[in-house]
Amino acid sequence: MIHHYPHSQTGSSSAMNMIAALLEQRTGQQIAANRAWRIETALKPILRARGLATLDDLVGQLVATRTGELGDQVVDALLNQETSFFRDAAVLDQVAEATRAMVASHAGRRIRIWSSGCSTGQEPLSLAMLFDEKGMREGMAAPEIIATDVSPAALARARAGRFSQFEIQRGLPVRRMLAWFDGAGSEWSAKSELLRRIQFRQQNLTADPAPPGKFDIILCRNVMLYFSGEVRQRVFGTLASAVRPGGLLVLGAGETVIGQTDRFRPCDEYRGFYRACEPGSDASRAHG
Image 1: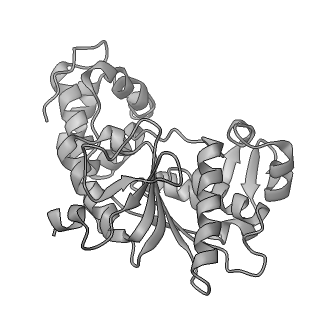
Image 2: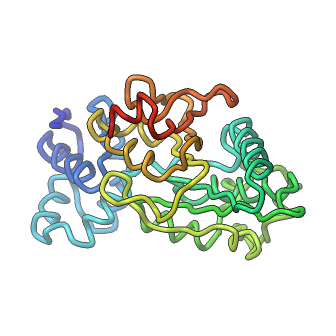
């Protein structure tokens, strides 16, 4: 889709269009024309670092290098990595509740959870803390947590488990800070026993297959917002292929499957969650 971005102080409309097109080509994500300011704000550090005056100069370098490493930097800067520990805590509490119920009804089977679009790792780390605190490890296997993101830079931070004072204080009470993180200067590092509970992998939701195996719960919160309707349907197909029959999908508060896909239906037990349609159901046959 071609957006018509306004001319700005740092770039022409055509430069803005080319940069936004690069982001969409690489990740499927779109930037609405009324949010063009995000392009300028996100790319200012790259302009400064390379001694460039305008976005047009940046596009010139992108063309000259056939995007290359610079293209990776531009795309990474444009990705919205907004996240925090225990974001929408009530939702995560429901995930823990649903996990306990699955453990109880599937004795001997390890529950698998996929945190998709995990950014710098706060969501899967929050889940790992929550499962431990709620006694998920008492007499039962802790759920397996796979966390993926399209951004190599975000994943590098997630794997390292290092966060600023601001990031740690945003969502973590002192009790959790001290229990799960070690302070060093202005940074806090997740303890190795916490990081070991999560497998971080790079994955592009719009182009790559899902991680191997079937998942009982998939979290894909505040990711669909940035996709076109066509891309969204494709991503729902990827998620549906990865979830066990009857498994759960968790979206962001402003997202829904209604009118988007027939592979999931609203869940009766957990508000705001979606249940994968069973094979052989009317919805499943419609996609068979």
